[in-house]
Length: 264
Image (cartoon, rainbow, N blue to C red):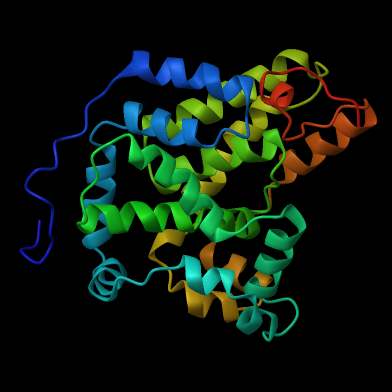
């Protein structure tokens, strides 16, 4: 690892703790809005994958440049005034339309992660900055990949994210989420194919985490998708339509992740 990388000397190596992950997964199934549980599951299962992903990141020219500058995204992403001034059809305009439609803010995700961090010892080093960047680009992943915030969309997006940033915690949540939805979906609904499609699309795309996010916001959305090699989630869209035809909407309500059908 290059000498300029700072890792706090008191930071302990990550441990693999599957029983802890399972307990937090049960809480997440009971309440999908309890986002804090996601951080616990990822932390418990990812083991050394975070360190490996960070090392791969800083081995790229783009990663080294970003680490040297250490941009902090939430204030920029939550300042909708400059983004709204961008031309219609840009990534930025699509982003604020998504965030406002869903009632989300970048700071809101920061607050959820801080709940997790308040229960753990945290260190102000380069690992923390990298973890923040992974967190702060999550909703931009939604916009670029085409996955919605319904339970199936969130689970499929995590499969996409796994291929971008491998980690057992992320793929575990994705797989369990899709499996539980599939249990109560019509037999011809291609729920697990959505999982595999997300995983495949993430692998084929350029690493979003390495992008200059501010410059990306200025690009036309379809141009950015083409440049990054992001394919449309066709199976996911078809599956959502099929579920709707059966009166099932995989909403953000707790029973959706638990696999219980919710009337549209």
